Image 1 (cartoon, rainbow, N blue to C red):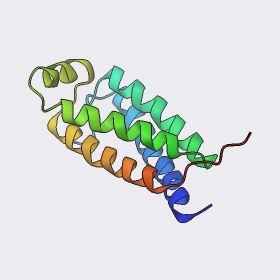
Image 2 (image 1 turned 90 degrees about the vertical axis):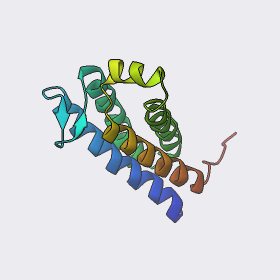
Image 3 (image 1 turned 30 degrees about the horizontal axis):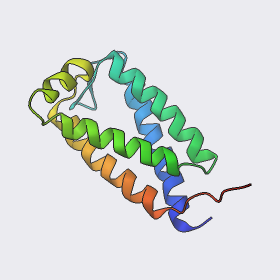
Image 4 (image 1 turned 180 degrees about the vertical axis):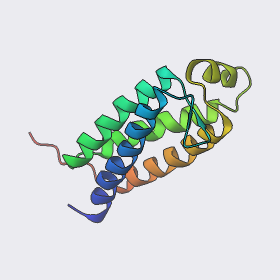
Length: 124
């Protein structure tokens, strides 16, 4: 396993743990870490993504997760600033500006790490 694969796996575990903690906390509070807004739907999504990230990171198979997570977070973050779509994102997920910027940054990093990691060899 090369360093970029290790980075993808470590990133998935780290972000997965953060998402899991944030999601569990978000089930009982609309504000997490003093600045990040959430709701029950948003919290459940984070719990599921957190568990998946931790499991795939532990199994050393996190590249695909990083691509999916990066695209998802980047899309939600950017859409938060698009008129019309932003209001929908707020209604569905209660995403404030801090959450949107965090999503954009973490999404971009996830994609950079994922595309630096080599694809898994195809076994025929």
